[in-house]
Image (cartoon, rainbow, N blue to C red; front, side, top):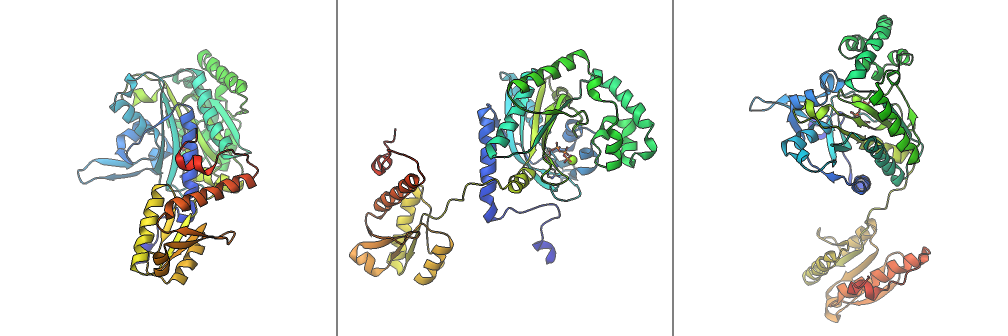
Length: 449
Ligand code: ATP
Ligand code: MG
């Protein structure tokens, strides 16, 4: 029994008291991406395992150690997506989106699955917001995605994060770099961890990404990729930096950033914070000019990023960034007796159509208990409907904050309630110091503009 009432290690629930924060975060992030011309794409949670082997890369930790892979009942090897890019590239190819005018800008909010050791900022099910931009090799595009992430963070009210960028070149310049790296690490072989010893032959650049303190210490003095860039890659990187300078975006060049996935080329970047512990990378991305071809499509330069939403949420909370308050209950109608209960349901239905949050009793509580509940849900207004109110055609509407009571017609309840509620909101705006010449009649008639 204990097993079924416990969530799986490394997963977490978002409870009702928190979900409005997630809705706000997801919406705010998406809005910024839309300002940059991104359109949302939705892809499946699972794909053929081979897609990730090719799209993420066989030598990566993700593919080697972290994937949730299983055989389905038809004997196919299936993997729960560990990241979003591979699935989006697959969809881009499958639906011929490369035939549309470039750039094709796609964004997504997804759950991801990685079998990792759960700790603060590291989960087995986590969420990413990602953007992919296909069909451009211009450095302007690299600077633009960095600017988008910066806008997202700024808009959310985040402070104190670093933008670290690097260029890891193209397969051409990387050949000589790999050799230099290999020679360097070969000389330190005895001190490297077992995994890095393995990486030495397969992909020495991976060692730069190792989280072990000994390996990352050794990596500090390793040859720097920026010293090995070919002319084209060098010029590209210089141009990305000029764009960022012109856009007023501060960054640091960090030659140890290589990113976890295999197909990155040229620009790579991370947005890092020191305020949420060891897992401080909130967002990472870069250019992956070789990936579309690797997955079987036409040669297509592309780039993108993925943002860890749990880490972003942790940082927002660590910095005490205010979230908008959750929409409260506008009106609670307490009722007693069959006829009044039905009237309450009718009024609630009408007002909900107008966008108000209206609750009434569907549990069968006493009026006293209903009022207690209204208090608990923070109702702005309450009204009590019973036999006498129905007979007289009048009820009392109570403003729960001021205690003020107004008589309101039962027949014209919705219209009178809207008038009172809107007036109250306008009063609040004036109290907050906003000047407005909008009045309740123009709102009710819909003639605002
Ligand atoms: P890390 O170095 O932290 O393992 P990564 O290089 O594996 O990150 P990416 O594959 O680039 O991460 O994923 C992009 C972002 O997704 C990360 O910067 C991070 O914010 C988030 N992320 C990655 N793995 C996890 C995880 N297991 N739990 C929570 N968030 C994660
Ligand atoms: Mg990782």
